[in-house]
Structures are given as structure tokens and as C-alpha cells.
Image (cartoon, rainbow, N blue to C red; front, side, top):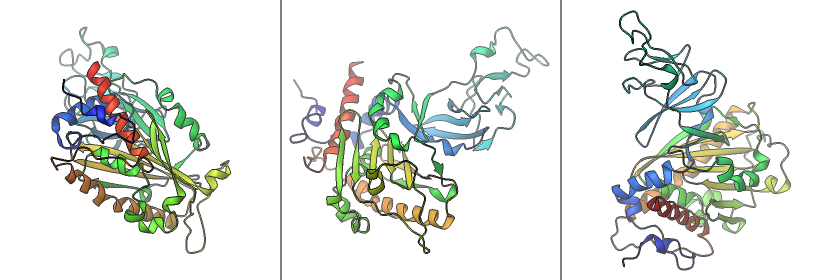
Length: 379
């Protein structure tokens, strides 16, 4: 009997191997992971700050799927398939404000911002806008199951995942101090990075601190490796924390205001978590960030990075300085994740080994991915 190579991934960290090369370079394996990992779980799509006002709509392509992120008239952020139910035409081709209805540019079928089909001009012939065979109540936009936490829009494409609050109950409780209004810093607090790598390598690199002294010497000058600790909750999430956080200050000594009500441990440190499968979060006393990883192909990933603050009234120059600082840190990781992607073409690489002391968060993620694939195979 041929042993499943994923069995080696699911061993204790002392003897486990990493995910095999195929999970980074094989199209068939990528297709399997798309269904088992990205469609079957709560996957990050965007942030609600992408549609800040009622009626705002933004088309998003995710794994080839045309989706529409929209804030409806009641202020609820929703996700729909971005196609008309008539002939499958794309409805919204660029970000816009929906002033009236969402009108299909092909035959002018119209939808309300809550997805209801409201108008079908000439569907019964010239001048006849109804037909007995066309039941508008059953032909609204197809809504994708979604949940919002930490301003992040998570979607469950196949609809099979347990409720988000149940899946992530432990993390929600762990970060309960940050369950409060957060304010996106605006245009100067969002940027994107394009990586020539499989999306999983971006997760793996983010959730461990082992690489900090060599890849991030500037950061390590005030936040040393020994100041960090591992976070690994099997089957749930993983990441790293630091006991030492240094606030950014402007030329005049100004700093960002703290989030209110934080305990002492949050005043002196911070945590950086990978929320499986593809959302990376960071929290500190005075700002937070959300990174949504967009898998564009087998070996191409776009990082969408957003910075948040305790108040909307923050100094623009200091925000820009903070964005520049974080961008520099994240750019330092690019050569690493792209180098590992190239390395996955080495035919004798067997997935590698883990340092039991330092690689717990990465092994935790590999084990989670392997478990999801195993479950998918049994269905």
C-alpha cells in the first residue's frame, strides 16, 4: 500500500515533514486545494473599508469567480456573484456608487443593492415588463455566504463551513480587547504587493519569528528574537507575539492614540496571527493591520494590506510614515517567499523539516491544510 505523503505532514513536529512540492507547483494539487481549503472554509476576500458608504460597489475576482462586494442601502456589506441571472453578463466592471439599481448593461435587468430582482424590461415582449415564466422572487443575485470580523469580509464559497463565530471562537476571545471600532487610515493606509509565490508560503513566513534576525535586521534592532513567542493552536490558527512593542512617533514626538481599555500586556507587546487560510492580522496598542492574501494563480499572490487606528482623527504625516515603515518590512519578505517558491522545483526536496522550538506556527498551518485536504477526499 502506497503511503499518503500527507501522513508525514500530520506527524508530531519533531518528526513531521512539510507539505510536498506538489502543493506549490502542481496545477492539479492547486485545484484540489482550491476546493478543500479555500472554498470549504472562511476565506478572506476584502475589507469593509473597500465599500465605506451605502451603495458603494466593488467588483472582485477571486480564484476566477466574478464577485461583487457591496454595501446595501441599509448599510449591510454583502457579497454576490457579479452576474445577471438572465444570461450571465457581468454587472459591475469597476468600483462605483450605485445610485439607483444595479443595471445589467446587456438587457437592463435591474437589481436592488440587497440583490432582489426589481425590473425586467420587455421580458414579455416589447412594452411588457413581466412574464408568467419569469418569477422575480426567485431570480435575485446569488449571494455568497459571508461574515465580517476585524473589518475583514470572510466568505464561505461552498456553504459547508461551521458558523464563523464557532470556528474562530478561541481567537475572537483571545483578541476580545480589540472588539471595538477601528478606523481605516484611508488611501495612505492601503497598499498591495505582488509576489511570485504560492499563497501558502506567504502564510508560513508571516506566522513565525525565526527569520527575523536575518530578514528584518531593522525590526530586530528593537524587537529581538528572544522577545518573541510562538502561538500555535492546532486546527485553528497560529502566529507570533512580541513582548516589546515600540510606538512610532513623529518629528514632534506625536504618537497615535491607543485603543481604549487595553490591559497592560497589550500596552507593552503585540501579536501577529494567521487566520487560516489566507488572512494575516496584526494588533498593537495604537494600530492594527489586515492583510488579505489573494491567490491569483499557482505561483502568484497579491497581498492587500490595510492599516487601522483607534480614531479617524490621526495625523496624516504620521500615518504615511507608518505605512512606509510597514511596507518596508513586508517588502523584505518578498525575496524569501519567492526563493522558497523556486526551491519547490527541486525534485529531491521532501517538504523539509521543522525546528520543534521555532517552527511550531508553520507546522500548525501545514497540519491544518493537510487535514482539510484529507477531509475533502473522504467526502
